[in-house]
Image (cartoon, rainbow, N blue to C red):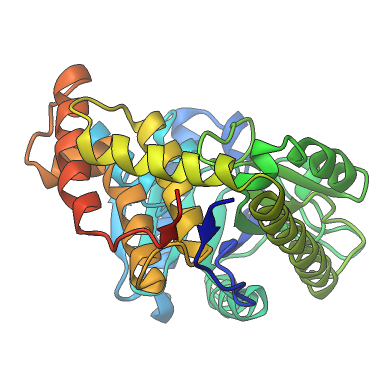
Length: 350
């Protein structure tokens, strides 16, 4: 049986990131999806002027979705600075983005105001989002009911108007198809697991979002506690599945890792979907200490998972109009060079 040099890590990187999103609307204004162009323009100006006065957004970059090009919108979407909905029907939409704080405020997405904060700790993110929300509320009058809470465009967000989510890397649960059981169980408990791009998306690289479904009749603290509890359980399921595979079917895991590295280091054409799938396997290897300097390797693999996306790739190569085969060639060139720099795999006896 092949031997793999590894140690089990308690602080695994299965939990990739966390996010808090708050949905807010202006009192007496039509919801963005139902407003006409004149109403959208009025809401946009009101919100833009108000956000410009908020101290926490003084260093924010300000984007008018109609004023920037398609490629820049794609770049911002890939970076998670804006949501994919901001790239659809761009009329009257804008965003304030504080890159250093991983904080964004969207105007006229599904709601008039959407606050987004991304990081690691859900309680700290909520504290930051809530403080920003309080500042904005000093400038705008929100639609709010004492009985219901915040009034939102989608009824499922009524109440707190908060969606808390965590991004999880679950490659082995995906390989064994156990992820389907977890998805069904979570749905029955008032939460949802989706692909890495949110509602309606699939996971091509084993990244999944766990988020709350219930926002009415529960507190923000209750939502966060519930997400944290089940996040911890799912991370444990993935960790157990990894080491069960290593004990029961080590060649399956080792073969996947070796194939992934070989393809990434030698391919001449590769699309983003295949690249992300293979990088996911490399991330698994780094997270399981199957390569030297695994922490540095993990960080670089995460960076590459962003750099291979279309808009980032084109910007890096100065080829904004690159399409199809040319883009796949550039992606392969990047991966060939960068994967070769990664530490050697710590696998013996294969």
